[in-house]
Structure formats: structure tokens, C-alpha cells
Length: 250
Image (tube, rainbow, N blue to C red; front, side, top):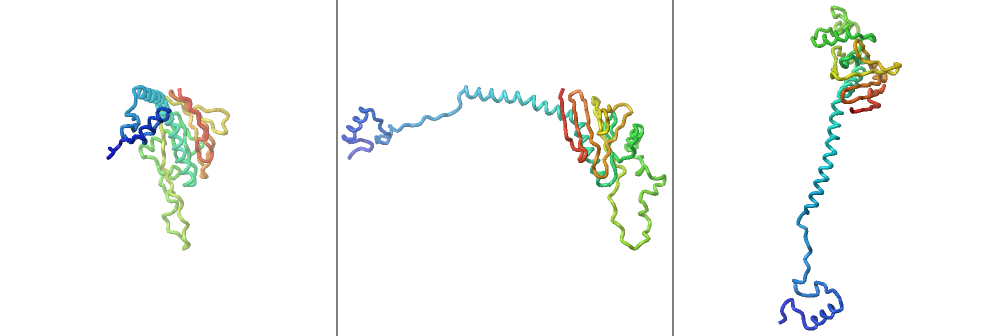
């Protein structure tokens, strides 16, 4: 009986003839399992590949750290702008909801959002307004008399008609006020559409940004200067959104 994996004499002679002629015999031609080729396997990375990968990671990290630091510094420097946008949005919403004008008052120390009182709002009045708000001594309605008899506008009286009364209007909040105190290093100027030049907000100067019951306000340009950055911001008239902003980090 022929052993497994052996070749006959004829097969051996054929194989020798093919080798002599330069023909490569397929591994399946021979019946011996030892003639089958085993592919070379890669078990890991070489030292050169590891060094190159670490170098690329270090270079990327070195470039990303200053970028993140710059974004953080810009965010901190931009805080007054963010707060002004927030106050303007809330002021506009209240003006539209209550159907009466609201304002953002600009003064050297910061921004104050409240009901619109007078186009001739002075710093002394603004200071008194803020102090009364903190102590809670301000009257609900500055335009009311001493007895506050007009606060309910006659709603406490018995109606003299059997006709159904009109639905009540929006609830008015005369006490609403929000303000933001500027950091010590901030200096800024304003320019409304009717102004011929920028107005520095310092000393006794108070400028009003009024929002009408329709939600429309006067377009505003603000230049804000800090030790770390300078901002030039423009606000639109319809939504109080920022329409243009230029940032210069120092």
C-alpha cells in the first residue's frame, strides 16, 4: 500500500523535469504538508512607527493649547457683550408683551434694563432708582399719587353695565429691573443712528436705548475696550441681534 503523501515514480520524474525547465510547482502538486508556505505575520509596531506617532500627537497638542487658551480669553473678555445681548432681548420681549416702551440705560458703571421713564433720565435719578430697588422702598407706580389710588385703574369698583367686560390686558410689572455691573477695566462708547459721533460713557453721561411696544429699537453701535480685547459691535433695529462684530485680542 502506498504511504500517504508519497509520489509515484512517474510523478517524481515529471516533477524533476518541470524543475529542470524552471517551472514553479504549486504547493498543491506535492502531497507533503511541509511544502505549504506559511504567510509572515506582523505582531506589533516598530520603534520608529511609535516615535513618529508620538511626535505627531505632540505637535497637534502644542498647536491646540494656545487655540483653546485664546478662545477662553475671548469668552471672558466678551462677557459684557453677552450680558448686554441678554438684557436687550428681555427688554424687547417685555415691551412687546406689555405694550409699553422699555429701556436699557447705559452709564459708566454698567447697563440697567427697566421701564421707560423719561428721555431726560439723569445719573442721579438712575442712582436713586437702583438704590430704591435694592432696599425695596420704590413705589410700584412712580406716576401714581400718594394713596396709590390709580394702581387698579378702577378695577375694584362694581361695573355699571351688564355687558361682558373685555378681557384683562397683560399683567404689568413695574418692579422689573435688571442690571449688569461692568468690570473695572472696561471703557466704552455708543453711537446711535442719529448721532454724528461716538459718545464716551463716563462721568454723568447716561444714554437710553429705548424699545417700543412694537419691539423696534434704534440701531446701536458699541465700542468696548478692555485690557485683553477690543470689541466693535453693531445691533439691528428689529430684533436687537448683533449684525456685525469685530474682536481684536491684545
